[in-house]
Length: 377
Image (tube, one colour):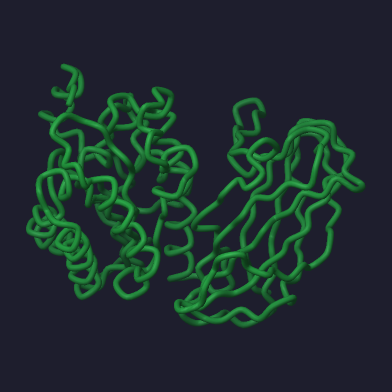
Protein backbone atom coordinates (compact mmCIF):
# COMPACT_ATOMS: atom_id res chain seq x y z
CA UNK A 1 0.00 0.00 0.00
CA UNK A 2 1.46 3.34 -1.06
CA UNK A 3 1.39 6.04 1.65
CA UNK A 4 2.56 9.48 0.68
CA UNK A 5 4.51 11.69 3.05
CA UNK A 6 1.61 14.13 3.20
CA UNK A 7 -0.80 11.38 4.19
CA UNK A 8 1.59 10.05 6.84
CA UNK A 9 1.98 13.51 8.37
CA UNK A 10 -1.79 13.95 8.36
CA UNK A 11 -2.24 10.69 10.25
CA UNK A 12 0.44 11.50 12.78
CA UNK A 13 -1.08 14.86 13.64
CA UNK A 14 -4.50 13.31 14.17
CA UNK A 15 -6.43 14.42 11.16
CA UNK A 16 -9.20 12.07 12.21
CA UNK A 17 -10.38 14.68 14.70
CA UNK A 18 -11.98 16.99 12.16
CA UNK A 19 -13.66 20.37 12.56
CA UNK A 20 -17.08 20.35 14.14
CA UNK A 21 -19.87 22.69 15.16
CA UNK A 22 -19.39 23.35 18.85
CA UNK A 23 -18.29 21.17 21.76
CA UNK A 24 -21.81 20.46 22.96
CA UNK A 25 -25.16 21.03 21.33
CA UNK A 26 -28.84 20.47 22.02
CA UNK A 27 -29.18 19.74 18.31
CA UNK A 28 -27.82 16.20 18.24
CA UNK A 29 -24.51 14.33 18.06
CA UNK A 30 -22.95 12.52 15.10
CA UNK A 31 -19.84 10.32 15.27
CA UNK A 32 -18.11 8.94 12.17
CA UNK A 33 -16.09 5.81 12.94
CA UNK A 34 -14.00 3.55 10.75
CA UNK A 35 -10.60 3.12 9.13
CA UNK A 36 -8.50 5.20 6.71
CA UNK A 37 -11.43 5.52 4.30
CA UNK A 38 -13.24 7.56 6.94
CA UNK A 39 -10.07 9.40 7.94
CA UNK A 40 -9.90 10.38 4.27
CA UNK A 41 -6.63 8.90 3.04
CA UNK A 42 -6.13 10.17 -0.49
CA UNK A 43 -8.33 13.24 -0.10
CA UNK A 44 -7.18 16.83 -0.03
CA UNK A 45 -7.85 19.04 2.99
CA UNK A 46 -11.50 19.08 3.99
CA UNK A 47 -12.68 16.73 1.24
CA UNK A 48 -12.91 13.51 3.26
CA UNK A 49 -16.43 12.15 3.19
CA UNK A 50 -17.51 13.15 6.76
CA UNK A 51 -16.58 16.80 6.12
CA UNK A 52 -18.50 16.70 2.85
CA UNK A 53 -21.54 15.12 4.50
CA UNK A 54 -21.76 17.65 7.31
CA UNK A 55 -21.17 20.58 4.98
CA UNK A 56 -24.04 19.32 2.87
CA UNK A 57 -26.62 18.77 5.60
CA UNK A 58 -25.72 21.86 7.67
CA UNK A 59 -28.09 22.61 10.50
CA UNK A 60 -25.63 23.09 13.37
CA UNK A 61 -25.16 19.43 14.25
CA UNK A 62 -22.31 18.59 16.66
CA UNK A 63 -20.02 15.98 15.15
CA UNK A 64 -16.68 14.20 15.38
CA UNK A 65 -14.66 11.99 13.05
CA UNK A 66 -12.99 9.44 15.37
CA UNK A 67 -11.78 7.05 12.68
CA UNK A 68 -8.29 5.58 12.94
CA UNK A 69 -6.28 4.38 9.96
CA UNK A 70 -5.31 0.71 9.85
CA UNK A 71 -7.90 -0.42 12.40
CA UNK A 72 -10.11 -3.51 12.25
CA UNK A 73 -13.70 -3.71 13.39
CA UNK A 74 -12.85 -5.32 16.77
CA UNK A 75 -10.31 -2.54 17.40
CA UNK A 76 -12.99 0.08 16.80
CA UNK A 77 -15.46 -1.79 18.99
CA UNK A 78 -12.89 -2.00 21.78
CA UNK A 79 -12.21 1.75 21.78
CA UNK A 80 -15.81 2.88 21.16
CA UNK A 81 -16.86 2.87 24.84
CA UNK A 82 -14.30 5.63 25.42
CA UNK A 83 -14.13 7.31 22.01
CA UNK A 84 -17.92 7.42 21.50
CA UNK A 85 -20.16 6.08 24.26
CA UNK A 86 -18.53 8.03 27.09
CA UNK A 87 -19.09 11.26 25.14
CA UNK A 88 -22.86 10.84 25.07
CA UNK A 89 -24.48 14.20 25.74
CA UNK A 90 -27.82 13.78 27.50
CA UNK A 91 -28.76 17.33 26.52
CA UNK A 92 -28.56 16.51 22.81
CA UNK A 93 -30.83 14.52 20.53
CA UNK A 94 -30.67 12.50 18.39
CA UNK A 95 -27.39 10.57 18.74
CA UNK A 96 -25.98 8.87 15.62
CA UNK A 97 -22.92 6.74 14.79
CA UNK A 98 -21.89 6.16 11.17
CA UNK A 99 -19.63 3.09 10.92
CA UNK A 100 -17.60 1.97 7.87
CA UNK A 101 -15.17 -0.91 8.23
CA UNK A 102 -15.08 -4.70 7.52
CA UNK A 103 -12.50 -4.30 4.72
CA UNK A 104 -9.48 -4.26 7.07
CA UNK A 105 -10.95 -7.12 9.08
CA UNK A 106 -11.04 -9.27 5.94
CA UNK A 107 -7.63 -8.06 4.76
CA UNK A 108 -5.98 -8.92 8.08
CA UNK A 109 -7.31 -12.46 8.31
CA UNK A 110 -10.83 -12.52 9.70
CA UNK A 111 -13.06 -15.16 8.17
CA UNK A 112 -16.20 -14.16 6.30
CA UNK A 113 -18.39 -15.20 9.22
CA UNK A 114 -16.18 -13.49 11.82
CA UNK A 115 -15.94 -10.22 9.87
CA UNK A 116 -19.71 -10.07 9.50
CA UNK A 117 -20.32 -10.92 13.16
CA UNK A 118 -17.80 -8.28 14.23
CA UNK A 119 -19.70 -5.48 12.49
CA UNK A 120 -22.99 -6.79 13.85
CA UNK A 121 -21.52 -6.77 17.36
CA UNK A 122 -20.21 -3.22 16.93
CA UNK A 123 -23.63 -2.01 15.77
CA UNK A 124 -25.56 -3.79 18.50
CA UNK A 125 -23.31 -2.42 21.24
CA UNK A 126 -23.75 1.13 19.97
CA UNK A 127 -27.52 0.57 19.77
CA UNK A 128 -27.51 -0.78 23.34
CA UNK A 129 -25.71 2.39 24.42
CA UNK A 130 -28.52 4.46 22.90
CA UNK A 131 -27.07 5.43 19.51
CA UNK A 132 -28.80 5.27 16.16
CA UNK A 133 -26.47 3.45 13.77
CA UNK A 134 -25.79 3.85 10.06
CA UNK A 135 -23.63 1.12 8.54
CA UNK A 136 -21.91 1.09 5.13
CA UNK A 137 -21.21 -1.87 2.87
CA UNK A 138 -17.73 -2.82 1.62
CA UNK A 139 -15.88 -1.55 -1.47
CA UNK A 140 -13.46 -3.61 -3.58
CA UNK A 141 -9.72 -3.30 -3.10
CA UNK A 142 -6.45 -4.40 -4.72
CA UNK A 143 -3.10 -4.77 -2.98
CA UNK A 144 -0.24 -7.16 -2.47
CA UNK A 145 -1.07 -9.78 0.16
CA UNK A 146 -4.84 -9.47 -0.13
CA UNK A 147 -6.47 -12.81 0.72
CA UNK A 148 -7.61 -14.69 -2.38
CA UNK A 149 -11.14 -14.92 -0.95
CA UNK A 150 -11.47 -11.19 -0.27
CA UNK A 151 -13.81 -10.37 -3.18
CA UNK A 152 -16.08 -13.36 -2.61
CA UNK A 153 -16.16 -12.59 1.12
CA UNK A 154 -16.93 -8.93 0.44
CA UNK A 155 -19.83 -9.82 -1.84
CA UNK A 156 -21.24 -12.31 0.66
CA UNK A 157 -21.01 -9.89 3.59
CA UNK A 158 -22.61 -7.12 1.56
CA UNK A 159 -25.48 -9.48 0.76
CA UNK A 160 -25.89 -10.27 4.46
CA UNK A 161 -25.92 -6.57 5.32
CA UNK A 162 -28.57 -5.87 2.68
CA UNK A 163 -30.79 -8.61 4.01
CA UNK A 164 -30.37 -8.19 7.77
CA UNK A 165 -29.28 -4.61 8.58
CA UNK A 166 -32.63 -3.79 10.20
CA UNK A 167 -31.78 -6.28 12.95
CA UNK A 168 -28.92 -4.12 14.27
CA UNK A 169 -28.89 -0.72 12.51
CA UNK A 170 -31.15 2.18 11.62
CA UNK A 171 -29.96 2.66 8.03
CA UNK A 172 -27.74 1.01 5.44
CA UNK A 173 -25.66 2.98 2.93
CA UNK A 174 -24.92 0.55 0.14
CA UNK A 175 -21.74 2.00 -1.35
CA UNK A 176 -20.86 -1.52 -2.48
CA UNK A 177 -23.77 -1.38 -4.93
CA UNK A 178 -22.79 2.00 -6.35
CA UNK A 179 -22.14 1.53 -10.10
CA UNK A 180 -19.06 3.78 -9.99
CA UNK A 181 -17.33 2.52 -6.84
CA UNK A 182 -18.80 -0.90 -6.11
CA UNK A 183 -18.05 -3.39 -8.91
CA UNK A 184 -14.88 -5.44 -8.70
CA UNK A 185 -12.39 -3.73 -11.00
CA UNK A 186 -13.63 -0.21 -10.31
CA UNK A 187 -10.70 0.19 -7.88
CA UNK A 188 -8.46 0.51 -10.96
CA UNK A 189 -10.27 3.70 -12.03
CA UNK A 190 -7.85 6.46 -11.01
CA UNK A 191 -10.60 9.07 -11.19
CA UNK A 192 -12.16 7.59 -8.05
CA UNK A 193 -9.44 5.40 -6.47
CA UNK A 194 -5.85 6.56 -6.04
CA UNK A 195 -4.17 3.33 -4.90
CA UNK A 196 -6.63 0.48 -5.39
CA UNK A 197 -7.95 0.90 -1.83
CA UNK A 198 -8.48 4.54 -0.92
CA UNK A 199 -10.53 7.10 -2.78
CA UNK A 200 -9.78 10.39 -4.47
CA UNK A 201 -11.75 13.56 -3.79
CA UNK A 202 -14.15 12.46 -6.54
CA UNK A 203 -14.59 9.06 -4.91
CA UNK A 204 -15.23 10.50 -1.47
CA UNK A 205 -17.77 12.85 -3.04
CA UNK A 206 -19.73 9.82 -4.27
CA UNK A 207 -19.70 8.29 -0.78
CA UNK A 208 -20.75 11.58 0.81
CA UNK A 209 -23.58 11.90 -1.68
CA UNK A 210 -24.93 8.56 -0.47
CA UNK A 211 -24.31 9.00 3.26
CA UNK A 212 -25.75 12.52 3.52
CA UNK A 213 -29.39 11.65 2.66
CA UNK A 214 -29.27 8.59 4.93
CA UNK A 215 -27.94 10.68 7.80
CA UNK A 216 -30.50 13.39 7.12
CA UNK A 217 -33.26 10.81 7.21
CA UNK A 218 -32.07 9.43 10.55
CA UNK A 219 -31.54 12.87 12.08
CA UNK A 220 -34.78 14.36 10.86
CA UNK A 221 -36.79 11.17 11.22
CA UNK A 222 -35.69 11.00 14.84
CA UNK A 223 -36.89 14.46 15.68
CA UNK A 224 -39.21 15.90 13.03
CA UNK A 225 -42.59 14.40 12.20
CA UNK A 226 -43.56 14.56 8.56
CA UNK A 227 -40.08 14.20 7.07
CA UNK A 228 -38.42 14.92 4.78
CA UNK A 229 -36.93 11.48 4.20
CA UNK A 230 -34.25 11.44 1.52
CA UNK A 231 -33.35 8.33 -0.49
CA UNK A 232 -30.77 6.07 1.17
CA UNK A 233 -29.78 4.80 -2.28
CA UNK A 234 -29.95 6.42 -5.73
CA UNK A 235 -29.13 4.25 -8.74
CA UNK A 236 -28.97 5.57 -12.34
CA UNK A 237 -30.70 2.76 -14.23
CA UNK A 238 -30.49 4.46 -17.64
CA UNK A 239 -26.82 5.34 -17.30
CA UNK A 240 -26.48 6.91 -20.74
CA UNK A 241 -29.14 9.52 -19.96
CA UNK A 242 -29.25 9.99 -16.17
CA UNK A 243 -26.28 10.72 -13.89
CA UNK A 244 -25.28 12.36 -10.59
CA UNK A 245 -25.12 16.07 -11.34
CA UNK A 246 -24.17 19.40 -9.81
CA UNK A 247 -26.25 22.32 -11.01
CA UNK A 248 -23.73 25.14 -11.39
CA UNK A 249 -25.15 28.49 -10.36
CA UNK A 250 -22.80 31.30 -9.38
CA UNK A 251 -21.53 30.48 -5.86
CA UNK A 252 -24.51 28.16 -5.36
CA UNK A 253 -23.76 24.66 -6.67
CA UNK A 254 -26.32 22.02 -5.75
CA UNK A 255 -26.18 18.24 -6.16
CA UNK A 256 -28.98 15.98 -7.31
CA UNK A 257 -30.39 13.53 -9.84
CA UNK A 258 -29.32 14.60 -13.33
CA UNK A 259 -31.34 14.11 -16.53
CA UNK A 260 -29.83 14.83 -19.92
CA UNK A 261 -30.85 17.82 -22.03
CA UNK A 262 -33.68 17.10 -24.50
CA UNK A 263 -34.29 13.67 -22.97
CA UNK A 264 -33.90 11.17 -25.80
CA UNK A 265 -35.70 8.18 -24.26
CA UNK A 266 -37.64 7.34 -21.11
CA UNK A 267 -35.02 7.20 -18.38
CA UNK A 268 -34.97 5.99 -14.77
CA UNK A 269 -33.41 6.94 -11.45
CA UNK A 270 -34.10 4.13 -8.95
CA UNK A 271 -34.48 5.38 -5.39
CA UNK A 272 -34.81 3.49 -2.10
CA UNK A 273 -36.39 5.11 0.95
CA UNK A 274 -36.42 3.62 4.44
CA UNK A 275 -39.77 4.17 6.12
CA UNK A 276 -39.61 5.23 9.80
CA UNK A 277 -40.66 2.79 12.57
CA UNK A 278 -43.89 4.75 12.95
CA UNK A 279 -45.41 6.48 9.95
CA UNK A 280 -46.21 10.17 10.48
CA UNK A 281 -49.80 11.30 10.23
CA UNK A 282 -50.98 12.86 6.99
CA UNK A 283 -50.73 11.96 3.31
CA UNK A 284 -47.44 10.60 2.00
CA UNK A 285 -46.11 12.69 -0.88
CA UNK A 286 -43.07 12.82 -3.11
CA UNK A 287 -41.51 16.28 -2.87
CA UNK A 288 -39.56 17.19 -5.99
CA UNK A 289 -37.42 20.27 -6.45
CA UNK A 290 -36.11 20.63 -10.00
CA UNK A 291 -33.57 23.17 -11.24
CA UNK A 292 -31.99 23.82 -14.64
CA UNK A 293 -30.04 26.47 -16.49
CA UNK A 294 -32.87 26.79 -19.00
CA UNK A 295 -36.66 26.92 -19.24
CA UNK A 296 -38.93 24.14 -20.45
CA UNK A 297 -41.09 21.21 -19.42
CA UNK A 298 -39.79 18.22 -17.47
CA UNK A 299 -42.01 15.12 -17.31
CA UNK A 300 -41.50 12.84 -14.29
CA UNK A 301 -43.56 9.79 -13.41
CA UNK A 302 -42.93 8.15 -10.00
CA UNK A 303 -43.55 4.39 -9.89
CA UNK A 304 -43.19 2.67 -6.53
CA UNK A 305 -43.85 -0.20 -4.17
CA UNK A 306 -43.27 -0.95 -0.48
CA UNK A 307 -41.21 -4.04 0.41
CA UNK A 308 -40.94 -5.92 3.69
CA UNK A 309 -37.78 -7.63 4.92
CA UNK A 310 -38.76 -11.12 3.67
CA UNK A 311 -40.10 -10.08 0.26
CA UNK A 312 -38.22 -10.70 -2.99
CA UNK A 313 -37.26 -7.44 -4.66
CA UNK A 314 -36.08 -8.80 -8.01
CA UNK A 315 -38.07 -7.60 -11.04
CA UNK A 316 -40.56 -5.63 -8.96
CA UNK A 317 -43.93 -4.65 -10.38
CA UNK A 318 -44.14 -0.95 -9.54
CA UNK A 319 -47.27 1.18 -9.37
CA UNK A 320 -47.32 4.44 -11.32
CA UNK A 321 -48.69 7.69 -9.92
CA UNK A 322 -48.88 9.37 -13.33
CA UNK A 323 -46.80 11.97 -15.12
CA UNK A 324 -46.17 15.32 -13.43
CA UNK A 325 -45.15 18.34 -15.49
CA UNK A 326 -42.54 20.64 -13.98
CA UNK A 327 -41.94 23.84 -15.93
CA UNK A 328 -38.47 25.08 -15.13
CA UNK A 329 -37.26 28.65 -14.85
CA UNK A 330 -33.53 29.25 -15.25
CA UNK A 331 -31.60 28.83 -11.96
CA UNK A 332 -34.74 28.53 -9.84
CA UNK A 333 -35.97 25.56 -7.82
CA UNK A 334 -39.44 24.59 -9.02
CA UNK A 335 -41.28 22.55 -6.39
CA UNK A 336 -43.87 19.87 -7.06
CA UNK A 337 -45.65 17.55 -4.62
CA UNK A 338 -47.05 14.24 -5.87
CA UNK A 339 -49.39 12.22 -3.66
CA UNK A 340 -48.11 8.66 -3.26
CA UNK A 341 -51.20 6.47 -3.04
CA UNK A 342 -50.63 3.90 -5.81
CA UNK A 343 -49.41 1.49 -3.09
CA UNK A 344 -49.63 1.41 0.70
CA UNK A 345 -46.56 2.39 2.74
CA UNK A 346 -45.75 0.26 5.80
CA UNK A 347 -43.79 1.42 8.84
CA UNK A 348 -40.25 0.05 8.87
CA UNK A 349 -40.38 -1.22 5.29
CA UNK A 350 -38.40 -0.09 2.25
CA UNK A 351 -39.97 1.87 -0.59
CA UNK A 352 -38.47 1.41 -4.04
CA UNK A 353 -39.34 4.30 -6.33
CA UNK A 354 -38.43 4.67 -9.99
CA UNK A 355 -38.40 8.35 -10.93
CA UNK A 356 -39.02 7.99 -14.66
CA UNK A 357 -38.27 10.85 -16.98
CA UNK A 358 -40.67 10.51 -19.91
CA UNK A 359 -39.90 11.96 -23.32
CA UNK A 360 -43.51 12.65 -24.32
CA UNK A 361 -43.98 16.37 -23.68
CA UNK A 362 -40.39 16.89 -22.41
CA UNK A 363 -39.26 20.19 -23.91
CA UNK A 364 -36.38 21.25 -21.67
CA UNK A 365 -33.22 21.53 -23.77
CA UNK A 366 -30.88 21.89 -20.77
CA UNK A 367 -29.63 19.37 -18.21
CA UNK A 368 -32.00 19.25 -15.23
CA UNK A 369 -31.23 18.35 -11.62
CA UNK A 370 -33.90 16.92 -9.32
CA UNK A 371 -33.88 16.60 -5.53
CA UNK A 372 -36.37 14.03 -4.25
CA UNK A 373 -37.69 13.38 -0.75
CA UNK A 374 -40.76 11.91 0.92
CA UNK A 375 -42.93 13.98 3.23
CA UNK A 376 -46.26 13.66 5.02
CA UNK A 377 -48.76 16.51 5.23
